[in-house]
Image (tube, rainbow, N blue to C red; front, side, top):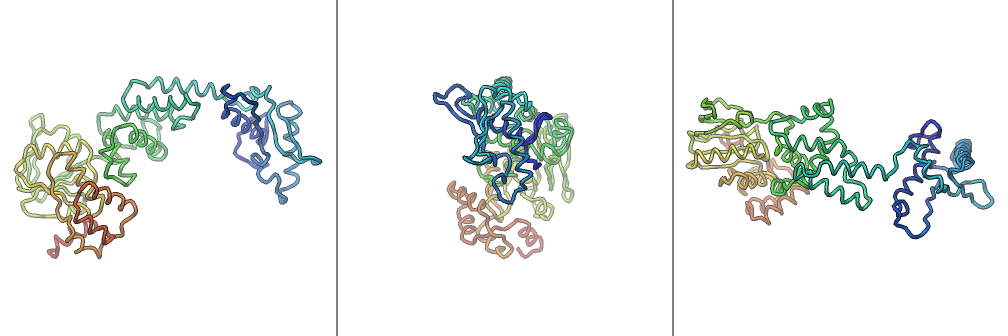
Length: 417
């Protein structure tokens, strides 16, 4: 027999289980099930829904005979009623015997929908009032259940405690560590739950401003999780130049020219003061350009893409302790690069100016550029509507090209930029 995806209890064949399951699906999805229907509804199943090819001339006759016998057996037991085509033994449709519908649940080992809905209501109610994000999400699912509709995620029994752990997190946690804590599997979170978690955070977490200029879905997920200190990799900020960092316990760290330093977020949490010697502070979007650049009298900070609240706090402290410096940002000449710049300005309140992110630089390196994607164009139009970097973005739109900063920094260090 063909396996059609139905789990068959020992007392039933796969076809028999399939027919009874489809009948219960139709019944539970009807107004009759909830006592809301005033007319008599019929819940029929086409045999081809259970045995594809039942009416196909090329199907093995023995297989059709076996299916017919399975249906006849159910009919003899008073579980179904078969309607045959006039003058033929061929099954036209299969109907349930409504009086024995409750027996289907026991035969299939299936829980009745009313009981499932009741358990789901209890689960969502348990999480009400814990945290605003969970509260908003659970109230929405309860509203769906009141309308006899399915909740948003079928995995909420696992998703809700996972969300609670993330929302309550107060220390750096790597995705694989989180995954082992919950699933004893370092890859399960990324493979099966990250998207669902981030979908809830995006919809109910109030992060619209955070994601406003971010078109890439993976970037959005990383940003959302970083707000709760969950990271795909260890979280570092890289510094290059001359600086003295004072910690709350009075200890100091020195950054020396020619010796770039990586600072973990654990150290960032302990920072009390930062003193910069150079007259210019430049944040750099990509690590290759951070490594390459050697501008005189410039202190470099590599933040890696869009910046979470912890990294923004570092920039605000830098500006607070060094307000007389000239602040620049060097990023990709693409819509996301300008989105990062806007995000950096708004998140920190620091008046960053773009460095080599202008129309002239775009034209200079356009031969090294890549075509704009559809997402690029959407982000570009959004930024133009906001009045961001109008000349550079208009030129980017005209040329249909974007340029990565690595080629710019390479030419700058070679002296031909």
